[in-house]
Image (tube, rainbow over all chains, first blue to last red; front, side):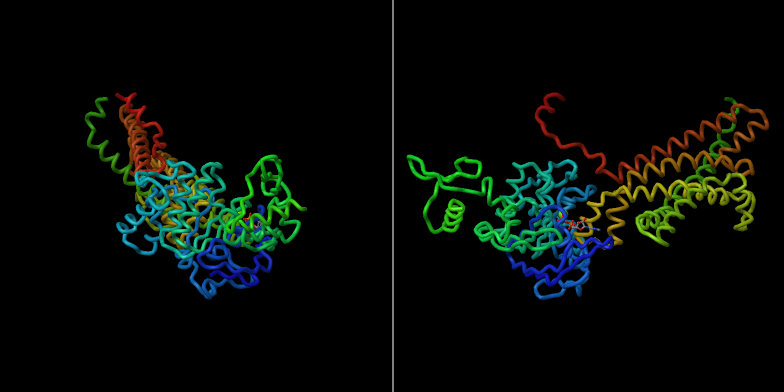
Length: 287
Length: 232
Ligand SMILES: Nc1ncnc2c1ncn2[C@@H]1O[C@H](COP(=O)(O)OP(=O)(O)O)[C@@H](O)[C@H]1O
Ligand SMILES: [Mg+2]
């Protein structure tokens, strides 16, 4: 569990990137921080592994105050995946993946054989092991980045817009892969994105941020969709328009759901599993 | 030409003398410039005293190059107590000129490292020290190499100036050749100086290739089968 308590970050220039932030991130769940650019997402993420120091407040990991921990040691037990992969261009794929275990003193040979196995885990061919990052596609680079983040088998994985720079088809693939991985690995994932669809797809808990790291709403995707806390949230998640605003249209052959563009989006099926979704679309019809 | 054939041993000796001055000066310039260049780059974006320090390091080291070489070679023995004809004077003088070029090159080289990659190294848990040696310095390599190649060529050429004071190098071949009017000796001095510069440059380029294999990695093979057909 990661807990933010009254965390504030004021940068030397005077920018208050995060102002009195409070949040609990449950263990073995994916928490997504979503907000527009400059809302403090990266700052929040980097305060967890102490790349950014807090101005005030505390962050605890499993009850332990991170300010009491040695930053380098702390970072080695937290996985970090960033946009544009952040791979070391002068390390081969396998060297990149094995970096943290090697830093931790795992013998090279074992670190490398573990790293090969990790390539399988993230769906990369082992034949890519000796390539340099510049010899990979964007999607492959991000997979290597994920493998590297997992290499020391950390409990916590921080991901800063990891799929932001790849094309939409590859992004879909990587998102599905992450969901599969998370089901297998059960990490505490903190995922940053500006894409609300990605947030709802990946997050168990979604945190919608306004400027200054102010929390507009926290909840599961369905809680947020069913009951946006404010006009800001409604408009941010597009509840009032587009493909999120489903309504029922009655046709001669039965009822279909149409989205905000008037396109058929599906049919309404009564059942336990989709009960909450059904409630939401009825609400949007009545409004 | 006769003169050359009759004096191969002397030419060989002068070539070695030349290398014995130029090579240590090149290596020393590189090694000494790394910490100075690091400090200059580290505090370039700071303010107050540290910014001043960074600016002064760059300015002062750059100005070293403006000192005329002959007076420097004459003044050094007085300052450090060596003999007037001691090659050490030239080594030290040339190291100063090398530093003049290399400090800025090093600062620029370190500044050229992608901040994204530096942050990613920090995030993975490199300590400051290991991050410098394993990430920043290697990635600064291409710009460092460009800098040291310039230093190498300029050092090899400036080494000849010591000949005016009678310090042995290929430069003695042209001072002596001029005095005694032996064109073969003059040409031998010039050609060998250029040759040394070219060979050292080649060695540096080769070192760069060996130390930075990632820069020369081929692009991914997308259509391997077609290539095979073309080659066959
Ligand atoms: N190192 C820094 N120095 C000064 N201001 C910064 C720094 N990093 C971020 N900021 C500022 O803090 C705010 C939040 O930035 P960031 O956390 O990067 O937002 P996001 O990741 O949501 O785009 C922005 O206004 C940004 O300009
Ligand atoms: Mg960001």
